[in-house]
Length: 59
Image 1 (tube, rainbow, N blue to C red):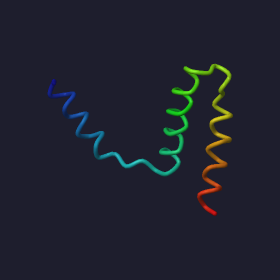
Image 2: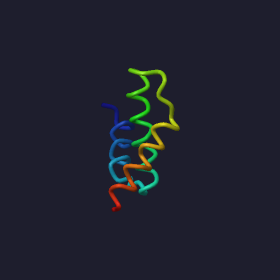
Image 3: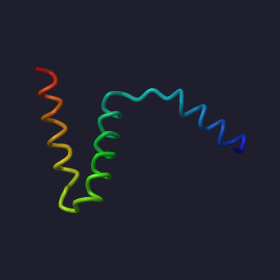
């Protein structure tokens, strides 16, 4: 592994994401993986379901 790559990896390990950044990354991951299997799934569908799950967790 190059020294530059190693330095970037170390820097990335120290990044702390905000709750909204975590949510957006989760939605992007879910969309990317589910859309491969079913092209009818949209980003809007993923966001809607994520909002519902978050609301249920708060109750």
